[in-house]
Amino acid sequence: MFSIILVAVVSYYFHILFTNPNSYVYKRLPRLKSERIEFFPNIRITVKGRIVHLHHWLFLSIIFVISVVVNGGILDAFYTKGYLLGGIVQGFTFPDWKSVIVKKEIK
Image (cartoon, rainbow, N blue to C red; front, side, top):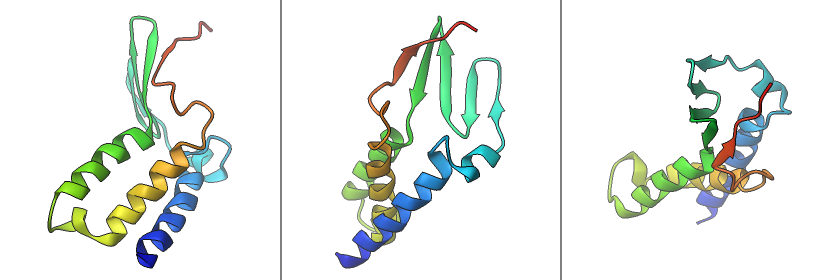
């Protein structure tokens, strides 16, 4: 149990570096996007004047639920579950954590 908590704390700070828009590391990440879909560092899809933002806590939660059900393999490892939990908790620290679909701002 202690190992999962330790990995979750390390994962929490890892996600702060790589997902916080104010982070030095995040600002240095390359941008990968097409006309309507942004793949990296965020997953955003533009549809009919709205932006669907798939937050990291959302897809990490789905993977975590799968890891609880699966017996064996890498998803069943304590470090995988700790990593997923740390990322999920860190995702909830953003003020926009519950905004999945938002209106596109006109520039």
